[in-house]
Image (cartoon, rainbow, N blue to C red):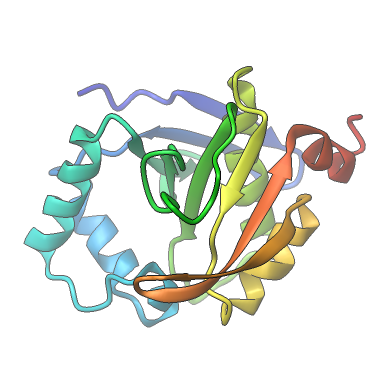
Length: 189
């Protein structure tokens, strides 16, 4: 498996952000510390041990409708992004996926020394990567209704809440962001 970056973006204030495919075995130790941290409660993996985390990312790696990417900040692991096809995963029977829809989850690594603007820079990088694929017309997300911090971030990059949906593990705000909505938040229209 290649762990070379598949997307890179330079943030004028914070430096280089890059995404590469997750190596389920090699990355499991760092991912385990992230997804089981109390700050990652909405990732729904709090009680997973290391083998369970490795198994989950191996499952994603084998799934033709789901991908996981390790995010790097100036070369060091700093965030996680999952991309999925909402016509086949997560929102089947809940969201009428349209051609060009892509689903996404993201998680920043826990830290005791937060950097102002970092999470927004991560989300901007994720959105730019997704929209770099010309076939992607709209990003679909389903954050937990209690995750107020991510709702503010999503709004800042152009997401609009469509409706509240009940998923097996949570109530969520089904939200969408088109390419034009995202670009409008960046002044790149």
